[in-house]
Length: 312
Image (cartoon, rainbow, N blue to C red; front, side, top):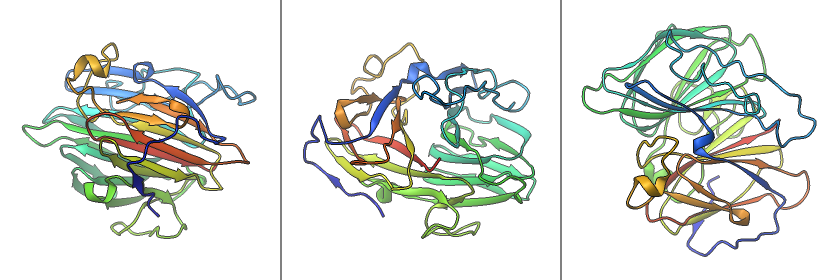
């Protein structure tokens, strides 16, 4: 069910047991290959989660040029629950990722602008556009390519990787579409575990894209001055909120206010944490107490953001 928006001011201090740890845009891995501009976040929270076993990041190789996140290694940020990778990519017209293989990952793309061609070894060929979500359950193995076939317009998309709860699954492909109207000033489930209410194990269907993992992804477009109040699910152990860099690309050394006259979108979370475009926050969820998340857009432009709830 979608969370409704309100124009009422969000209190800076709420009786909430949620703990926020910011992950600033400039701290993400970054690569500029000319035709590809990519920010990549391979997530964990070893530095602030006592007792969590340290891990060394081994990001899989994408194609031949280490173009996405294979060159980014940060042992402090390699995994967060089953959430493994969040890439925010911009690919120039006529460019893309040649055929390459994956296995034992749930991989999905969220198209922000432009067009992205997906072709895979299952026989799927699709041109994805804004609002589309393409989910690939790689299972025992799949090969695919991703290209921007448009001759004029770059494609901007987020690609997310998650760990499946079961190995050796049969590869599967799913496609879903959510309009801007469906996401404006509400929080909508766009990816959810297979078997949950409203989740259909079908290539094309209504509702969230199915995932073989304990990850639920929500999407929202908040207009200026609007806010959302959302109660985390009782099964949620941790969450991650990411504000997409929708207003345009900027290098890590350039802040939003330096780059744009309007400064891009700015979100304010419980307890006053402020996120600019490209910023994110880990959200630690206590077993007891209030699980309410409050998000307000305090800028003068729309803010598009993703919320990941994780059950492990």
